[in-house]
Length: 117
Length: 117
DNA sequence: CGTTCAATTCGATAAATGTCAAACTGTAAA
DNA sequence: TTTACAGTTTGACATTTATCGAATTGAACG
Image 1 (cartoon, protein in one colour):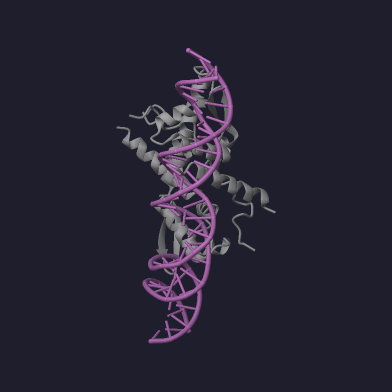
Image 2 (cartoon, each protein chain N blue to C red):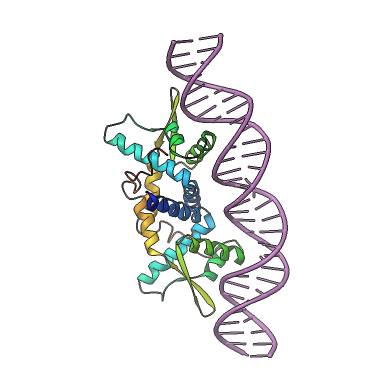
């Protein structure tokens, strides 16, 4: 038992790890920022990776690696559009993170915080 | 300029890093959980480190190290009470994290997401 | 005082991380 | 088809991390 919740804990830890590097966090924020512009109807959607490269003081291979980590943590998704790669926010995961800090922990009363075997 | 915001970004990244290890995340959740019990008046307050040691499958030195990391990231504070160490949730930092995922990013429109020099 | 229990400090070590330069792939456009 | 641009892959390297066992400190209690 308590498999589901342990899975969730690991998923959360993985997401936090992906956000634990300042450059990666900035990329994630950029993607969130672009999304809100899309919501306002000013943009067709998504955020180009090239943009991220030009806004951070790190090389293209590093940005590529960071983006992959964000995808791997289910925080974003990426899609090719012609010559460009477009990043999209993964809204369910964003909501999961939001809920995590919203009120009581999702883990209490699940056995996850009880004594070990 | 944008020093304040860059500092905040780094502070956030540091907090996420502290929460990026499953065992450390579990310790943090335990502390949050104990706090709510205190709020209900059933406990004098705080969470003993011994408890964390007995609930995780890692040794005392490792738990000690993890607790130090949480303190270093300003997520919790620790106080000696006789033979025991008691952990307390750092509420301001908890709120900062909550606000981070609450609605629009605190970073948009600050210059942090603009083109680099 | 000596013992016991809680927790920390001190190496050590294997694994993961962030970054880069160089070479490569894929798409568009001349 | 050649060129140019966007992004990835590969391989390398220095740094950080998670964990442990052994030794240590600190408080309480007989």
